[in-house]
Amino acid sequence: MKRAVRETFTLWAGLLLCGGLALLLLALSPSRQLLWSLTGESDYLPQIKGLSDLAGGMLRPSLEPAPQEVGEHAGVSPFGVNVFLEQEVETVKREQAVQLAAQAGFRWLRQEFTWEDIEVHGKGDFEDRRHEPARSAWEKYDHIVALAEQYDLKLIVRISNPPAWSRVEGNDAGSYAPPDSDQDFADFAGAVAARYKGRVRYYQLWNEPNIYPEWGNATIDPEAYVELLKAGAESIRAVDPDAVIIAGALAATVDLDGTTVPGRSFSDLLFLQRMYDAGAAPFFDVMATQGYGLWSGPTDRRMHPRVMNFGRPQYIRDLMVANGDGHKPIWISEMNWNAAPEEVEPRYGRVSLEEQAANLPLAYDRIRNDWPWLGVANVWYLKRATDLWEQNQQPEAYFRLVAPDFTPQPVYLSMKEYMASMGGQD
Image 1: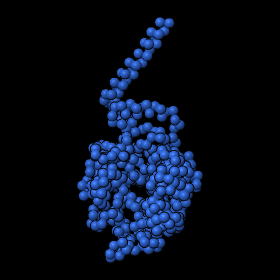
Image 2 (image 1 turned 90 degrees about the vertical axis):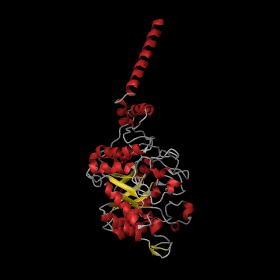
Image 3 (image 1 turned 45 degrees about the vertical axis):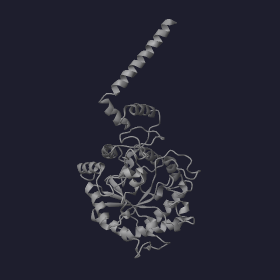
Image 4 (image 1 turned 60 degrees about the horizontal axis):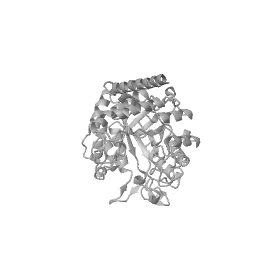
């Protein structure tokens, strides 16, 4: 009996010693670099946890990305950036922002054509009378399209943000809430497509329909979104058969009660499956998702449905393949890491300016090398027209590539260098 106890003790002591030696070796370089390349974590203890997460992931079913199936709209330059050009009051500043995007090497601009800013006062009314003198509400959007052409950039036009008149409850329903009539949305989308036919080809219908407050104050409704998507797609295609329809970007979330409790969100994966169940497939050419890195780096290889990291688009891809939609690519509508200073809430994670500058090129490396089913990936974001976000200590401000006063941030410079090394495009 004593001998058995001694042998058991010796065995456990040996295992603990081996484990301790393994942890010691992992704590040394270059092992730390290897752990970073697997977990996207910079600190040692999170790296060890990440390693255990990776081991646990081996017990889950593998994903089926089916890269060989992807057809059109995948083999394009991946370099896109979100812009807020409609917020620049001075046309010279609008052009300066586009110049900065082009000079960095970006090939795509994702720009909202804000419904409430164009069809301002009522159905079919495209005159802006909010200021004197009145003018065409199309004026600045015409300028945005002309600037994109001038600097050889393609526009991804996001159609969203309905005017208050499109809802009986007005903005009490939520300032981003869908309109009461899908036909009103369809008519506006068709008007945009008709005006810019031959000049704009890519239209994204809505943004983040699976989270609050992007679907207003009501419960999340995948089936209602599909009806809105269908109406908009059919209207655009009727006036421009060459148009490419991009689904509203799904935001990564693990919430499950958004379809039953107002003010909550709903899992992007469950939302997408319900889209397919509702017959969405014919009404979009490109699937879209967000690609924020949040609390780990671009090299994080962990895959778990309840973990938010840069690798999450792979789950979206797996669902598309399972639903017979593997021939369509995914485009990332927004991606970046947040460089909020210490006094600002790290709601989206926090990295240093240097880490942000290093992470974004590595994210593009992973997209280009590992995800042939992914086309454009749009950085969030180039710049804002004012420093209101900074004044209010909103962490959203610190995704910026360029400060409101046009000062380039380190991440702008690193991306400019990276895209130059790629020849600006693939």
